[in-house]
Image 1 (cartoon, helix red, strand yellow):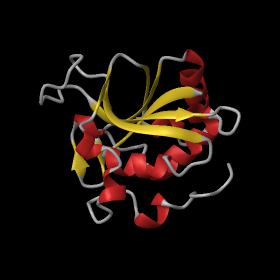
Image 2 (spheres, helix red, strand yellow):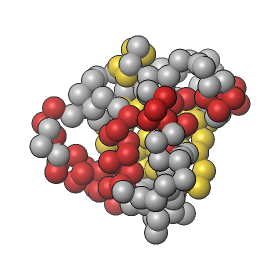
Image 3 (cartoon, one colour):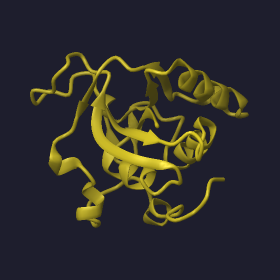
Length: 161
């Protein structure tokens, strides 16, 4: 198993979507690359993200990027849907340099790559979100989500692209 962190705006929707993808073994809502190693009620510099544990024999980084780009606006800086602010920025983070290189290659192969503002950076720090944020849309399906409902379960029980 391998781990990558995906920041795509509000973490509720990203987690709900990512956990339906083939090859995903575990997801956890959290915050990444902030100014300190604890939240202490302060999200200074953190991005909302989903820690994603996946089986690379089932899903590749390129496939993850294709799926991920379906649920984000890659041209929007610090804003996804109605959510605005630094904590809603988009990004791909990992301790694995190969993951980051593959994400960068995917972006560079897109014909819109020069407009994309998605961060691709090494993991600096990660903090798990409170339990109330874990699988939030599963427990409260009518909560706000910037990802359209028809996309949230689009790949449930499917095979890779």
